[in-house]
Structures are given as structure tokens and as C-alpha cells.
Picture 1 (spheres, helix red, strand yellow):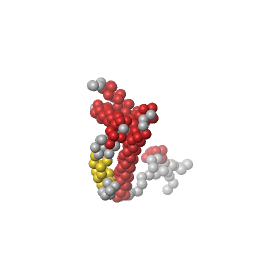
Picture 2 (picture 1 turned 180 degrees about the vertical axis):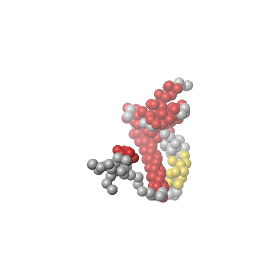
Picture 3 (picture 1 turned 30 degrees about the vertical axis):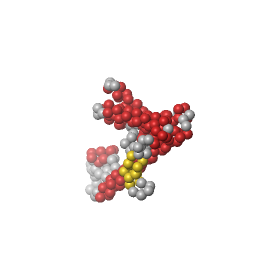
Picture 4 (picture 1 turned 90 degrees about the vertical axis):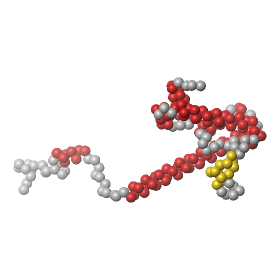
Length: 198
């Protein structure tokens, strides 16, 4: 359904309050005119997470009927090479992990989860573990990228010519010197004489 601009902006602010996006990202989306697309993307993630929960609740037979998918970033345990099949119902790299975690956590706090059969709870735990693994991998990638950027900046700074460090700013002393009244200016007149001694 179409939304007013005010309703869209309120939704983006709610995403920021939930911690799904930073306040800066929310402001950028509103100011840049992309708030509606941001809302649509997050709502797709919420709906996707809710569909996963419905599949989990339906039991193992429904989950295992989802065809596996090929993940080029996973290591095949049989061969040790990159690229392996993973269960089709597990989280994907492009899913918004924060949104999926929040939706799943909210469901796992309900009596619906608490009274579910053990295999349903186990499947939910597996999905949540998959979300945590992707989150950890992304955080490690970000940390590595930041470390590489810092190392690059350090090397760039090391290659710059190193000159003498500038003196600290001395507002009172520097003004006096400019006016000839302090260090660096002419000495004050001697008592009883018109000027400095010869």
C-alpha cells in the first residue's frame, strides 16, 4: 500500500531505533530520497524471516524439502576446496542478518516456540547459529578491511618527508613579539636612559 512521506520516515526512524540501521544511515535515506526503497528492502527481510519461521514450525520434513544451494564461499569438508552445498533453508549472505536475528529472537521468546516440539526448537537454534556465523564472518571481514586501510595509511605517512614539528601556538607570547614587546622584540629601555645600552 502507498505510504505518505511522513509514514515512510517514521518507519525508517523505527529501523534505527531497533538497531537495524545506524541513525546516520536513516538520515541519509530520508535526506537522499531513498527512504521508501530502504523500507521496502527491510520489509522483504522481515517477511523472509517470518517465512523461515513458518517452515521451521512445519517440521523437519518441510525444511528438508527445500533444495540445497551451492555456496562458493563455503569450504567443502570432503575435498577441502572452496564451494559446497548448504541447506537451502539456512540464511544467505545477502539477508539482513540483524533483521533476521531480531525476528527469530522475538519468536523464540514466545510460548509458541517454548511449546514447539524439540526438533522444531533444534531447527530454530541451527538457523540462529547460521545467522551468528554470518554475522561473525562479516565483522571479521570489516575488521580486516579496517586493519588493511590503517596499514596503508601508516605506510603512506611513513613515506612522506618528515620536517621539523611546528611550535605550539602561543597566543599571548606571539602577539607580544609581533608588537615588539616580548621575547623576540627589542629590549625594554633602561631606567634613566632613553633606550637600550650601547
